[in-house]
Length: 326
Ligand SMILES: [Zn+2]
Image (cartoon, rainbow, N blue to C red; front, side):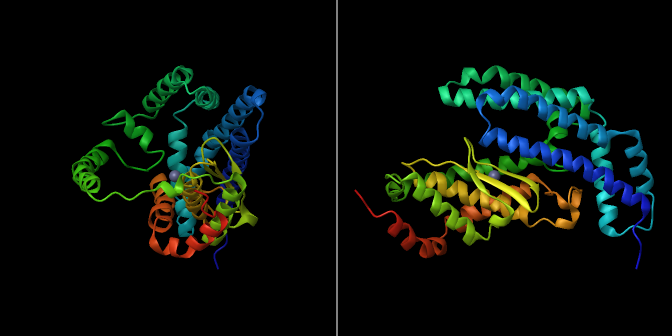
């Protein structure tokens, strides 16, 4: 049996400490979108920015860089360890291109953008959000320049979500879809239309909530390792594989809104709850890419939630919970 390399133990200490900070930020971010009172917005913005720069400093320190370089030359590491080190070294090289000030500014702007978006949504007025969005786009352009790229500035940013994917790969893919979708859409439009009027009746909020919880339980979402709350826009966030939060919103006149969001976020959450607990805070304990993440949520939402088998199972529960009133 091979012992853990002492250098690798040091790597774990630093990397997981940075993860502690990032997950603590995620708790504050979750609270920002669920329970935080409006007057807390400014203080929350600075708290998140401070934590972001603390984690950044840990993950870009010269000591951490040297540690990763020497670990990447070690032969006697387990495959999982080698993989964690390779991913962390990649992240280190990328993170090092951003200054702590830039990371702080980006974090502050993200919070400001969120607050402006909430205000714009309440007032139904895009102009309330537009200036914050413009600032965010400018910062993102700057980030792309700092990261550097060979062909297209967006390649630099895409890499954060899908490692190695480029505009040159994606453009032909979307072009192909663009050519195939309109004829399918035309066929659908020309076919006999099915009414979704049943979704647009009055569905009391509390009953919808309970139904959503039941669906999540049957999907296998572990409420001992997560919870659901309300938010303006449904999302999933994670503080460890053992604490994965989801949110939903309820429209009393549209049953579908709550239902699809519940199943969709439930799909994201199942993926996060399934990540290996013994890889806490390490690359192998983190989602591999946004595409894989979204594939899980869409699979549950579209292939299962919109499937016949799902409704054969849930239809009687739905109609007895919501007897036809019209
Ligand atoms: Zn999603």
